[in-house]
Image (cartoon, rainbow over all chains, first blue to last red; front, side):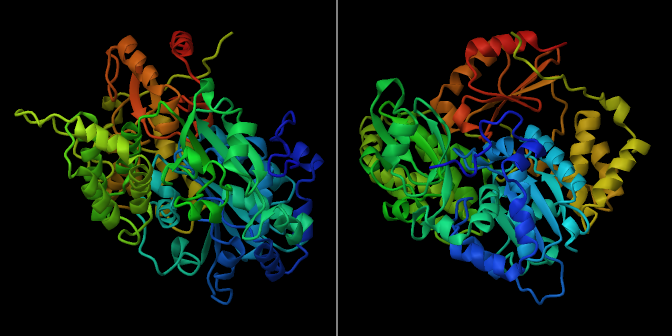
Length: 437
Length: 175
């Protein structure tokens, strides 16, 4: 496939406006601004573009939820929080072609009649903040941003809002709380952000990669976009591959290629000639799949059918040496650290599960542990918490217990009785900000 | 060839931060930030960043000044500040060395880096060397998983880090 989102990847000085213009940047903007906003929404709907941040919700449909007759300002937020472990495509996109993102933001804002857009970027991405600020300044200078853009009468301001270290702020309602200057704690839905969002106004939140697709849909048409991939899973996708492969990195491929093609062809296979044990297909909250699933298609529907989640397209490859008990402990450590502390099933359930897995790893597992883990993953997921962080820590539990249960059973079978002396207590983790690292 | 490209942080001593006021330059920056949002409160995160860049860390006196400027209660500002891991309410060393501890980096050997740093610096995660030069911190995913292991020093990312590279970086960092 010809590179689309990464078309500037091998250009020298790819971040500059001059490079972007040379490669056709901002030509879709000129086309879009003389279109009717409604037609842009229709075109994006027709393209079948699904959100690239993890949930895979159809973008055009999301835009359609914004009530256009409400006499309130509307906001567009670009979600550049990129916090799901394994995901690093938005960082790549910002490094490669910040103007493609800005063009996408302008067209999308125009499509929903927003005059202010915020880019919410994770606090650690300091360099990326500088890149975006620089690109935004260039765009203002060229009248792609500001008042009366390209003399069409449309006004838009774009601001970068830097987070400060909180995974949960990638969740859209926590993200809005964070922009409003609060602790990043998710809101109860409904009302949904499209109606009551940022500052109580209608708001659309889209991922970096989603917004970067928009100029191409406008430029080359919905049919062209829909011809890539397969029905319901259309368009180019940035796959970010990490872990035990020879060539980790970001690869732009059509949706619905197989995992075998990604791992063996593009990433040069498993590192050090080892065998594949399994892979996490969609960021670390997606249940792990065994090596036998390597021939499934990498897209939203196929991965869901296989019992996992396509998520952000972040593929973590695990070789035969990977200890699954260790893996689960590592991921649960992440999710309990990142729990915002609001909902009991997530705050307490995560810690409880982590404590059990740590005990199993230390050699003190009990026969009833696996059942307890399963019970925890039942009561903390599927709508039992305000946001999907509950589901996020349950995904890894479900995955390893479905496909690698034997390893846990073995560890428990070999377990020694608990020592008389109490095990050292784990750090108290009752919500963010109350504990050290 | 030199690989370290990080400048040291400067921590303002607590005795100089007993009574915090925003000078003209800070006030100008704060006003510019306030123009970006319809409410004063929304400028809280960026203003905290501004203060941390200016003074190196965020003691209670700074949080109080921020609260007053943005018309919020000091308790609210403290609550927000401590929710986010990147605001430092305690002074750090000149170099805040953060090693990613999450899956992808660990699969590529990040735990070896942490062990090496602990030994070389003689401190545990969360501690600062007695000379105030380094603070070591194990952190969660830094979002650069394809180039793991990743170490962030102050604002800069170092990727595909090996023990040898780490030694070289630590040796090269300016005073």
